[in-house]
Length: 449
Image 1 (tube, one colour):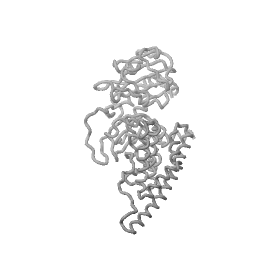
Image 2 (tube, one colour):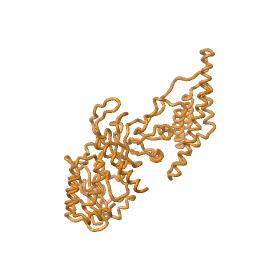
Image 3 (tube, helix red, strand yellow):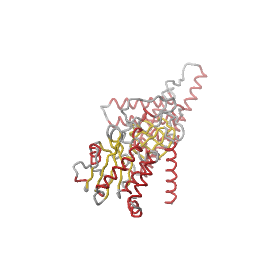
Image 4 (tube, one colour):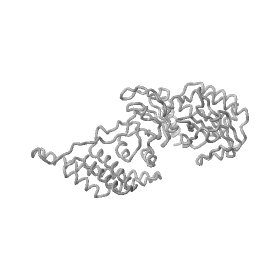
């Protein structure tokens, strides 16, 4: 794309490209359109091979949210504190900084995966907002230092996009006032930043991840007459058949997930633990024993999970056994839902799933609702998370700050996992931009085929 930009520049005078950018920046547009288009257009204007747009988020963190020239996976992942790197230095002192050989500057920060050593000529310009910096624009190229005219030009271009960045919608976790919300949705439109996990863009109604509700009632074989005893025995037999069916379904599903992980070359060794647990005859037998003692299906599986957890707790802080106990509990929840679905734990179809984390339960149970996207809070720190969302295969974002503060069941959410943004209750223009993006993607796929 950078080569194409240079070729176009030869054909069109710089003055025309500047005027085109002014006309573009003057239009009201969704933030994602700005992040897609501004870097490409700025690179064209200043004849740069790389252009990045950073937004100021959280407590003084600069996050790359738009880019042309680097691999797409850099967006949302490259992060700098104010004062860190040449970009952070430019924002700290609110002045442009240029370097003909970036790595020789004392504040230079190298990102291993970017391959930016190919573009050592560096120019960073802070973007000013009404009350301080709102981000930065960075351009890079392989040769020829940026001159004073290009520096002044980039300052002006940054000023043009300052209003479009609309950082007021990037919710600061420290913001004190929470707006009133009606039950079932109705929050005003907000944009929440996070980390992209699985790229793509989608839209759907928000649904919080759920687990089976706790049950306290139990079947008994006892003291309410022969009719009650007969019904209890019939229920026990039915539970036994459902439990066996759930084990068979789960074993087949986990095996398929493990095979898919190998196909995608994912590090998913933990799935082997689930295969091992499901193949453990003692696990099945213990659940069946508890059923025969008169407990219901859910109670039997819950008791198995408690017993495994207690066993792990009696051994001195064995991390392996503790993790295995959590896996057994997760699996027992899944078996409960596979055997006899709990309506209270079922999810609506084609929803955007939100939660503090994703587990194998969600691949076995929640995935049956065919979710279109996933947004996880800042508490989703498990190393398994990336593997699980890639296996789920929908656009996914983690580390979404203030997710549960602003999102509720029923809200419409636009998940932009290309830039790492979740838009709660998106505007009509943002929905239209998503549809246009989908049409472009379909056209691109058609041309490739």
